[in-house]
Image (cartoon, rainbow, N blue to C red; front, top):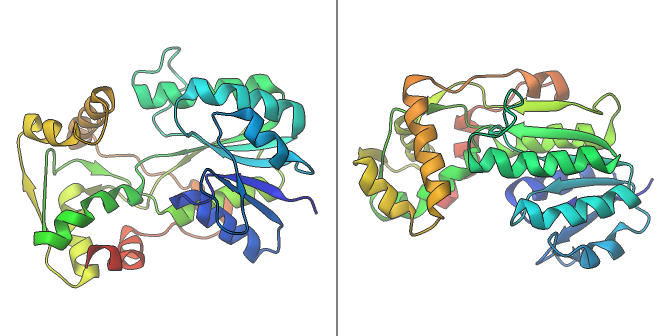
Length: 274
């Protein structure tokens, strides 16, 4: 069996893909800019660093790292060297739009289009809100049990990275996934207020949400992210107050098991919040 190249092998999703493939006795080549001891070094924005890792590989798990435009040359290289690509895209991509209506969707659609043009067999994973984003609250919860932010009533369907990885592994190793665009969500909509409470319960320390004006939240977020990403996120939160995130059954349909509740994610990561 040829090895599967897993890009982003040290990330939240990529590391789980590596673990699940190895549990199935599938040979893995773990790629990262800072690889594990048994991995290989490569930068997705520099195709010349990826080429050696493709020797003997015909299947790749790919994710966006850096700008979409920088990834396009690497996608072209994959088109020359491999047969199958499973791409970790985004639920922000909207197929009904010619021009994507936010930066996150536009970035991921740019890569999707490059993969479609490369002539490989492809599967796109389009997860909605990552449960792992809640790890950004860990310092605040550890320090005082309070998370300050805007739009606490925004209700989203947080998906466990284990569920994303499980779908990825099926697409990487199984048949019938070519041309699929899998919308991946958690099991139910949940407000940010609820998420903080559940994390506190899992960590064994009370945690609560404190609502602040959007302008104040924006200023704090700008210290960590570019303005167009911050504005995209805040606009999304505002919309989710009025229209909670949708729930799909894709995880169940692809893997044959139910998706994992946010409570399970919180228990899995409780140590990060203590």
